[in-house]
Image (cartoon, rainbow, N blue to C red; front, side, top):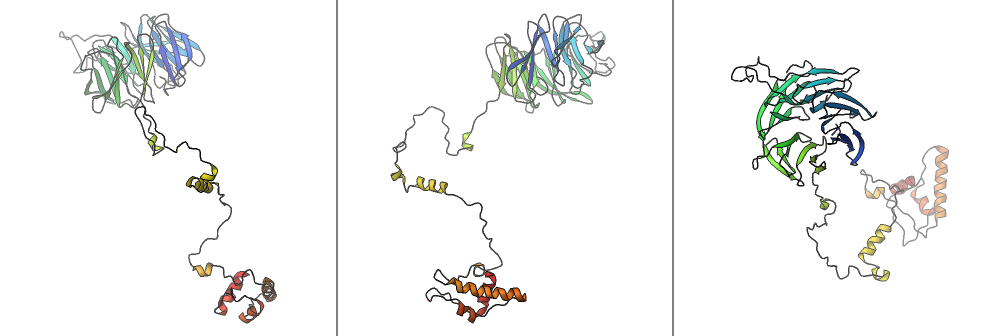
Length: 430
């Protein structure tokens, strides 16, 4: 996978390199990079280039954007190759060679090769030696950068793990994987065991955690971390079996076993962001593994009932009866429909209630009904308004004048107790 998990690169036994769009599962690039089988592929940090290595003694630096290829020739088969995880400008990668010392290659107008040490430092007090005190010599079979590219982890054919400073280049394991946080390292050895180590500025520390298949004692073809580094994933090397084991790092317990078709698992990879695993079988088929999501519709509809088997639905007696409009009139469903069809006034603004007054003060005092002769009342109000406009002073007629001007019917007449209420009502009317 590339850094974002949007592209997947793979190498074929016929020398082709293929790049898939992981979202649409379609081929976006395909090129003949080698004449024999491809042994490994690696992405650049920006996702623009792919590095492939093969048994034809060369590595191919493939620029996907420009469509160009640059060939780096070696004198022996290339086992693994990985591009620098941080540096996009210098185009640097590390490669482990068959029966040769691993090299760091810096691409440019002229390619520069730097050989890496393969023997442990004999000045260390615990450096491994033979019984005759001669240094132990072994070949490097796999090399990997750490997260920042400052150190190279090299595994040897004698089972030793060398940590080499990638800047100074001073420094049987089958595979080395570094977690995305750069703090954990898993080492796959030929003794059918996956070991977990902790990596910090002081060096590599053994966590004494071992992961193995305890029943059949099978070996492993590939191992990796999960996308967040909480689990270790191992691909079994058992023939005619496609099994993937997942362990919890916190408890060191086996939490899941994935079983695929009866084809031997060759390689696997973990998606860098999503909980997705892809595995490769011996016939070149790529299998995708993901989590199984359970849909819970009860959260959307409380009346939803989940069934596990097919059932015969028994309809109600009146479920599919046709009801006429006359019979439906006055029913609950019809009333609900009338409520839904009612227009809602959203433009009129109601007068807010006043918390510092009583209902009698806020209410409207009706002094006349529909039978009142309104003309005489308006004349009284107009005369009072003229007096107010001429003197700039509020002049209110007394209660006797109002009583003479306004004719009320005896049956609907509203009694007025004193003059203050009448004066206040007239002021409010103006």
